[in-house]
Length: 181
Image (cartoon, rainbow, N blue to C red; front, side, top):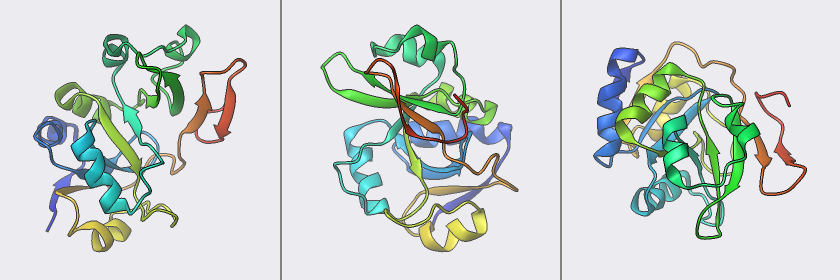
């Protein structure tokens, strides 16, 4: 049974530590609730299993600006200048692969990231189903499969991030969302 934590900035360090220690949890991000875990392959496997998602679909990586700058990812300067924002950009990695990255515009999530390091995030739903946007809807579906769920009174925006492919010029909008381009 998942631990239930209150949505407060005071709990952000504990949530960051839980993620850093390998736990998977659900909490409000800057757009909608996110199913989140540390950005590593083992945690990714667990997220795929929980979500029943094909492994051909990757996850968004949430980072602070400092973590993006230290990552070695090839992020165009005009994208960096827009962050933090509900704008996810697909960018090139040093190994030639691509990653979807966002710097969230939410103090709660940024506080978590400062403790945990980069995390994977995906909408809270079983793959192919509608995203769950409230604690009351999330708890019965995911309480047995995650380590913790944050109970927030409301979710800001309720709309997924805008997703762009920044590996092409001009950038290609892949999903219209909370960030207006």
